[in-house]
Image (cartoon, rainbow, N blue to C red; front, side, top):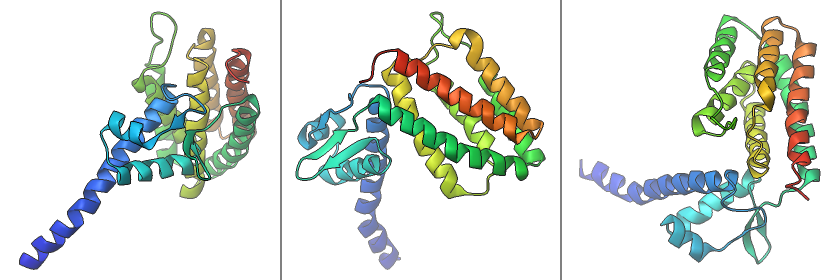
Length: 232
């Protein structure tokens, strides 16, 4: 018993650091996505430690994770900075996302079964229950979560966790651009109909149509972000 207690005691600091690192990672990610930490913003360690009430070790781990998924950049001998945002990068993100999600959607349709269909139907139902705010905006955490869950459901039968991981990262990176440009309008109801068309194509096992609709869906959002004039 003493040996077990001793081992638990030794492991506690590491577990605590991991928990703190995960917590500050999500806080920083949310602030980057919400635009509180602007593109190009210098991330000074002391200021971050004060603002997020965290120590040096978990903070650095969180920043390394954010660097790995492209939300921040690490500069030689200069520390960390929020990743810059540009039209060129957004277009590259959308192009890459289209490439990867085409593979994932085609594989999911090929592997489709009743469970896959049920995930899509349920995710679409939950998303369709979300209504815009009074001003037409669509930006609450619940709304974003339902939107994310629907797109994840479309890819969920692709049989590759690695591919799903990359798609999830690209989703977060393109979400940052939507937030930066304040693109939260429902496109006069068009976004809901776009989701319904993708939902129907996937359930009909029409991979070509589903891919075409999905690519158009992503490009429409990118075009609105670019037209907003918020990027260089």
